[in-house]
Image (cartoon, rainbow, N blue to C red):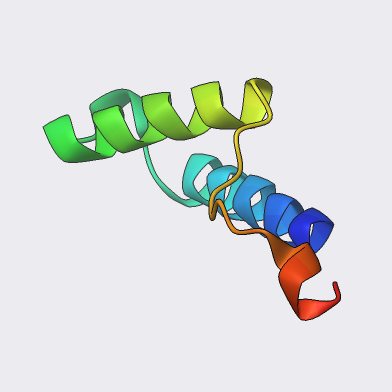
Length: 56
């Protein structure tokens, strides 16, 4: 599950880049994309859960 969530996060980041003018986002969008890129690059999970407790 953690790898699936990481892939989904990367996919969503790519969709925003493909579908929107990332050079003209509002303040929230710019902040979101900056944080998301940093978290992807630094391998910080989108959802910080211990999946082992559910046997994943």
